[in-house]
Image 1 (cartoon, rainbow, N blue to C red):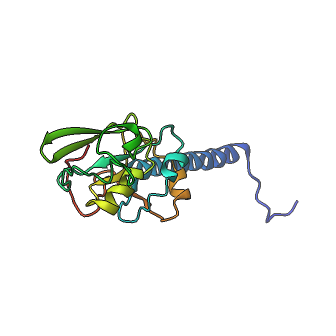
Image 2 (cartoon, helix red, strand yellow):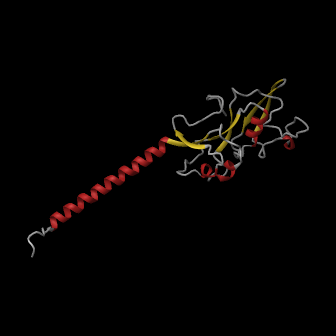
Image 3 (spheres, rainbow, N blue to C red):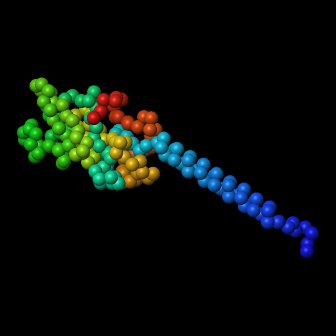
Length: 191
């Protein structure tokens, strides 16, 4: 037998295998914890300044209805009698009749305040995130209706299906500490 070849006895082999196994286990646990921590610190959000109201938020989300909902930034709203986010552009009468409403699910509720002011509320249970009201509000009004990912509904997919399908690249990961992005205004007064 060659004297340069070192014999490994069973005790050394078991000790070496045990050390390698523990090292791999600790590394794997550390990797899983790091991935979970970074995932939990970041959430998906839509930047309304980039949003083009394509309607894919309503159809691409893994949830039905979508976790993307219209929010109303009340401090920006003019409480218009003729709301571009509520009424169809071709509406003949300014009534709450279904044929005059822009929202396909009647998720926007209109409430009279005083002449000529109305307040608009979004019923999130009915909102599908199609963006039709947001497009109407932005083209005729001041843009107080905006789409946002509602984090109480979102499952925070690792690869958001809406983000993947978004033609305007409006979705990004943002800190859980400041998850909402509003176009033209910064407030907590949204519904």
